[in-house]
Length: 164
Image (cartoon, rainbow, N blue to C red; front, side, top):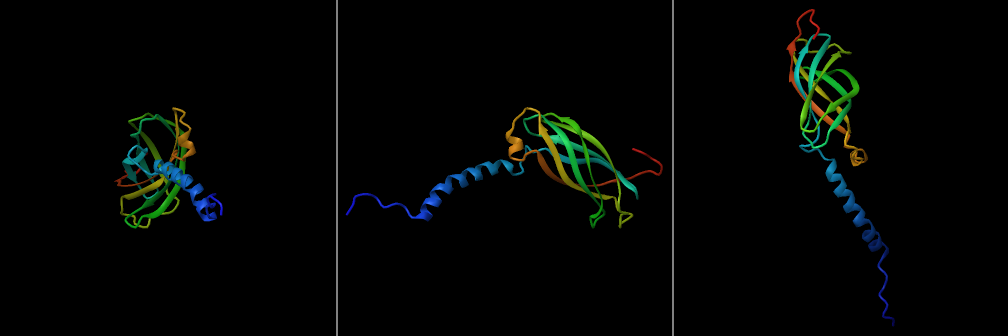
């Protein structure tokens, strides 16, 4: 009889080696959930006609790092039934300093005629893409550079012949 301890069973070895990795992954994912410091998209004002919508988007950065908005990918729906009428994207470089809000004017032509012609309800959803101006590489690694959004507004009717 030997005093040597018996080696652990293979499943115990697998658990002992994977448990620290699983715990680390869960801690990292905690930073990926939506929180109050993520950038936000709200509709500050809007007009709508039978052919398009003009939106004033308020982009806010409640976080502590300066960001640059590089793209907004969006889907626009119309009416109480939220019938999809357009999708597209805006690209550029818009500074979004920490703790500030910037306005972006966006005209979206409808690719499909709205089903509820009298409705002024607009639903906007999509992804706000940013880059961190401070150079913190962890944001890109954890894919915190893409923030989903969803917002809606009751738009004003667009006057005939106007071009906001």
